[in-house]
Length: 261
Image (cartoon, rainbow, N blue to C red; front, top):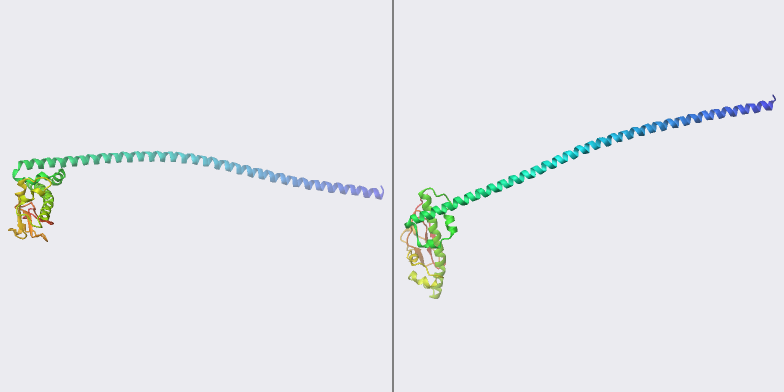
């Protein structure tokens, strides 16, 4: 073999070795890449499985929350119904209590009217001016003892007397305006100035007095600016009745003559 041939053979062998070495190196790289891909796929599969487990867990939690929410809604509905039932029960109880109080109150009014009928000396003609509200006011408290009835009857008389003063005082002012400021000398002189005639029995319970001429100190009532006044002659029940005195502009009320409480 010639030298040229030896060189050629050597070059061929060298090329073959280099080619083999490259292929081996390339095969190693491909293997590494494949291993990396397998590992990545395995990692991805693990992550996917983890996500699936988390999804399933979340679904379970959502289902539990939905059940709890439904239970809470049921509880809220039951609570609302219970509150409505309690409110209705309370309203019914209040109505019953109000009706009971009203019934008892009206019964006391009936008792008071019956007592008035049974006690003629407790009546005064001014009672004709009483309203139903006056009767209700007088019967507001208990009516169990004689003292209770005396106070209630006195309240009725006071209301009637107040009502009379409310119509007599305007008549007195009009009389004085027509007569140059002169005070009447007789109560009958006021009759034409009432909007409707007043029972003479009422006028007989009052008298014309010079201010400060009351004979009993307990009945002394001073009305500022009045020289003459019209006052009650007396009281039906001195322990509980008030006494009314009025002039052209002022109106005074004395307390009971003694403290019977």
